Image (cartoon, rainbow, N blue to C red; front, side, top):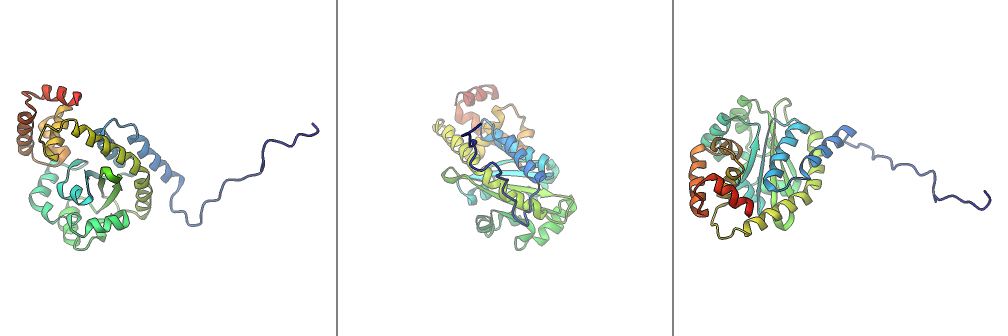
Length: 264
């Protein structure tokens, strides 16, 4: 028709070409999206952590995952509040009894390394050779990675991940974790801020961060052993924390505790 020029300024536009040496494949990006889809609808921090553990195991194949959090990275590493999945109770008991004090990821140098790089391998941490050779390797773990996710003013998440079938965490996984941490940052900030608000609503309860963790899981119906395995602490420690929680919240049972937590 005369006078019709079309709707498009450039009808022959083509997609932007990928940069040379792009390290991530379409499969890698699907793994990235899979993790994000697993966590983006979590209703609270506890569910977010659980979903993240399972997603990293499923989409990356990590044999063990620990998700720690705190107001600062140093606090997250030092206090160890969080959850883990994939490790046996025997392994965690041995770690707590003989190896926690010499864990290279608790080295004072690690926070600075993580802040500078975002993702590091355990094999890159000075002084890690003996820990890997004498503790991890006999238990089938060849290497670990640590990832920092900065949630801004709300705090940080520190994620530890173990591999078993490769000599070290693959370079491609490290590249993908760098991309993942950037996409997780706003979700982590939102979840940590929401959790802080929830705790503020129960400020009259004088609970330590670890007691809060135990109380939250008990309120969700987990047994003492399940809580111990999830938080990588002993069953007797769970019992001690739970007794203190019930006294502080003036609850006489787990059922009453669950009701109080739901109201909070």
